View 1 (cartoon, helix red, strand yellow):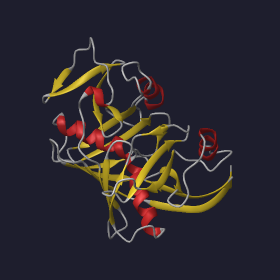
View 2 (tube, one colour; view 1 turned 90 degrees about the horizontal axis):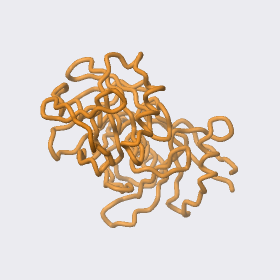
View 3 (cartoon, one colour; view 1 turned 180 degrees about the vertical axis):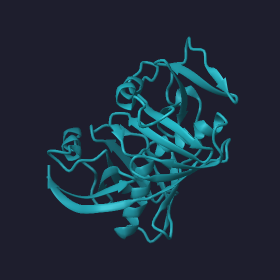
Length: 279
């Protein structure tokens, strides 16, 4: 089959975007793996699919697939690219839209400077939401927030619609992201896997972050990972309510007022090229 697509990235986290608003999305897992392959296909961290909404309250349905062909719950950097695409492609005249993911509704706003702000919803700390098996573990409390001992390190566990385990490190450049990351990602304590975050606190309003993503490995940026890291840092008393997050691919701004308030993420969304591929 011949497939039209758009290549985009958000702070280096790269995507193949597919418009399925006119024809149903019908790629098999094998075709998605080929599409995501950086040598034999287009290459990407995730595949983003734009579908018509099935709910009158939302403008579109937003689906995310890893380059393995597995569908996942959420991708914050992809959400920014989503709104940039639908506006540029003329699929909507709105600059602020509502989209439904697998498990939550997001509000996406295209700013005048070209950046995008995403209302990511409130973080969830219940272990069943990740899920996380804490049986037999004794956490340490930091400012009333629980840090859990796993793989010899202390992890903050939080869901942003997808699961995250965040640890604080002295230096992200020397942190064992590529060796410890996969051990945490597939640890038995996380039955469905987890995104492993490595956070260096530079000041109360700035961090550096690397994330080893579930099924994708380390990416240049992870939007939900940035949100989870900042939320964990605020809960632990290390960070203020608005934080600049330096990823390897660029800068994100994360804001959270605590409690059941939503996390707001602002960052870039860039179109790279349009293309056609035979799958």
